[in-house]
Image (tube, rainbow, N blue to C red; front, side, top):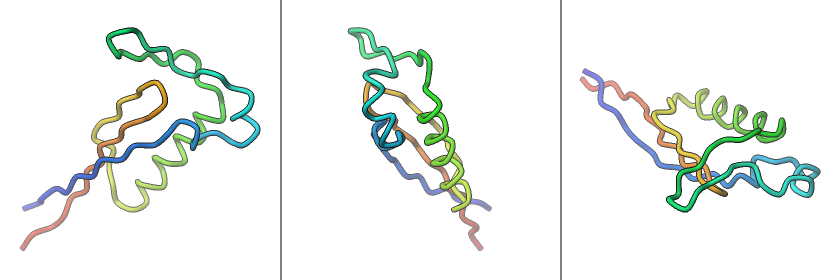
Length: 85
């Protein structure tokens, strides 16, 4: 029977950007007054940085269970199966 471990991680959007892109991008996501955020057009640097982070955690055996995008932070909930005897 499998058991699952969970981990919460917050990643700041600025950490997904290259140094050049940090100075070129003012805003990537648009959020309304209720806190609902929508992905507008993700610049290539953020897309690449996010995919790299997902791949990195995947190689460690983690599966992305949920991702929530906020104005400056991405919340990731990771799940990892652990075998029990």
